[in-house]
Length: 138
Length: 118
Image (cartoon, each protein chain N blue to C red):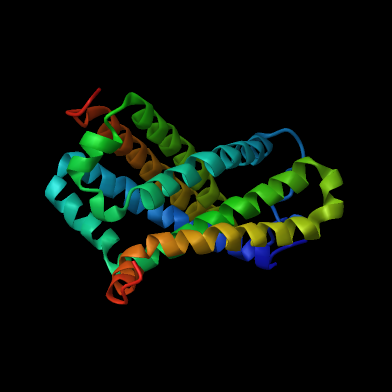
């Protein structure tokens, strides 16, 4: 089945068809599914902890340093989530760009902007997790 | 095509929030006062309504993604694709509605208190 943009979508699952051959596209196809399963746990747990157990009204900068990130475990958990979500999100946006930005020059430009932006988020996200002091460390 | 369209729309929406969220968390180290102001918005009524929308997008994308993975990697599950589709919506409602009620508790809890019910 084809979408209006020509993407190959499975008639049954409505997911992307498994790419033919053994190239990079097949690797991305599998990695999207592996990171997807990881995010099912990591992202839903993160959302549940910060919306159902804690409330946004309590989450000041002080709370992040003293409570949420006062153990290496939760810093590691959130860093793993960051890496997984950036990979899944940016590879997903790559698929969206490839579907809608068809010209080869504009496509390359859009992807270059996307990857640069992804790298910036990876650096600033990692920086705050590593560098934020842990005053309440146990 | 609804499953595909919802998956794409929710994915792009979640992507936009992730960008915002990495930047706002960066402020915890860079500008804690500004971070606290951003979080005050998250805790406000419009902020909470947007969080309910975000949670719905996240839950739909997660459940539909899992459904796609099950069918793609286990072709025998194709026979049950209708059941999987309805099961994902049943979980969406069963988990999503209580979740939305919890996120909105600062709105309804004072009302219950005013009525002497809590």
